[in-house]
Length: 115
Ligand SMILES: [Zn+2]
View 1 (cartoon, rainbow, N blue to C red):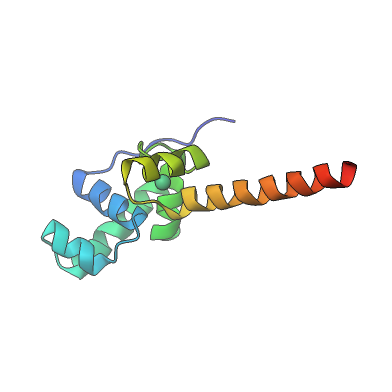
View 2 (tube, rainbow, N blue to C red):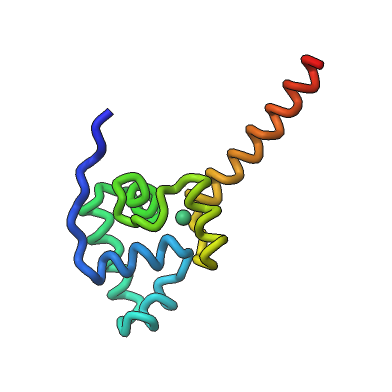
């Protein structure tokens, strides 16, 4: 499998993407970046188009996979690293961690059945 192309985002687009990955609203992000909410929404649409995403949530998901958010690969290891460093977690790495817990439980049940 070849990795998807890594689009080039502007600093502002990356800031919006990071903020969205942290679960910030456009209003909060706007205040942080010195923009109004509408401008943040516009940037979100633009960066989504660059990445080929359907919406900002999809953009965050794809961004993890193409390495646009290098601090997180959207897996359990990333989730644990966030916790250790006191960083915000993301929907994708939280989901990976939850999936791991489900698999662990299923594994324990399977082992019990065999015993
Ligand atoms: Zn993450």
